[in-house]
Image (cartoon, rainbow, N blue to C red; front, side):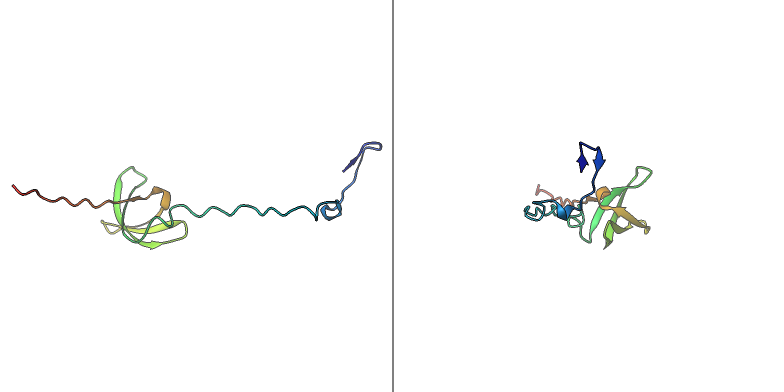
Length: 97
């Protein structure tokens, strides 16, 4: 607090200010839930590696920030959820002639 007449600064504890204890408490908003963690389950996904190639793999384990995948070639990758895409299985049925 600045006293104008003598140009002196006073430090007052917050609890000493009138009305501070009577003010309504407004809690902070809830933190956002991590994106992607709920969307993915153990199953087939696709992602781009650092060279730009598209790889297909199976989610073996869901970690807090990443998913552990095993590609069709047998390599193990830890990939961020934002880089993963679901694989949609398309079943084709043949038409009778």
